[in-house]
Image (cartoon, rainbow, N blue to C red):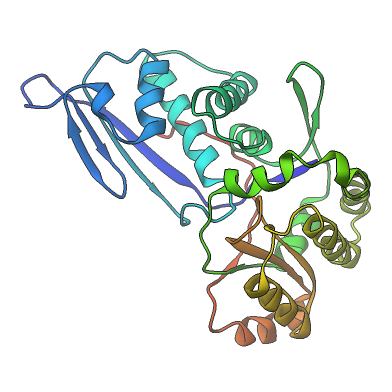
Length: 295
C-alpha cells in the first residue's frame, strides 16, 4: 500500500507530578481526570499504556489535536504512537521507528482489542511518502517513494480535504467487511493493482492520472461494504466531481470523516467556493513521523 503523512498533528505533553499533590495522575483531553490509581483512569488507551510502560511515577498527560477524532485521518493510532513514544522517552529509553510501529500495532490490536489495520501506526511512526509491504508473521517493510520535491509540491496544490461532518468509529466500519473479504477477492486484487499503478504514476510524475486513479480506487473500495459510504457521502462526492474535482476518495475505513479531492489548480478556487458550506483544508505533505520536541 501507499501511505503519506500530512502537516496535521496530535500533541501530547507529559510532566511529573510531585507527591505533595493530593492526586497521582492528571489526564487532560476532552475531559479532565484526576485520580490516584492507574486503574481509575477512564481513558482506555492511557490507562493501558501506563500499565504497559510500567509507569509508577505520578504524572500529568495533556492531549490535543489539529483534527477531530473519528475523522478517518488516523488520529487514534497517531495518538497511540505518540503516547508510547513519549512514555518510552520518559523512562529514558530510545525506540526505533520500526519497534514503535510494531509495539503500537500490537497494543491497539491485542491489548485494546480494536478491530483496526496496521497502516496508520506505521505511517505515524515513520512519516513521509512511503510504500508499505506487509509480510508474513506480522512483519512489514517500509520503503520511501522517490519523487521530485517539485512534483510533490504540485501534487499537494491539487489536493483538497473536505470534511463530511460525520464522525464514526473505524473499527465498526472495518468489522463490516473484514470478515467477508474472501467474497470480495476480485475487488481487493483490483485495489492492490491500483496501488502498484499509483506508485508508478508518482514516480513518472503524471499528475492528472493520479486524480483519475483516486476515483477508480474509491469506486472499488465502496464495493467492499455498504457501510463504507452513504447517501450523504455519495452526494458530497458527486457534488465535488460536478464542481471541478477530477477524482477523490473517502479517507480511512469509511462511513464519514474527510473526503480527499484531486482538483486541478485552475479549477481549485471555483471548487472551494462551491464547497463554502463545508470545511475545506489544504494538504501539505510532512516527512516527519512521531518525534519528541522538548525534553
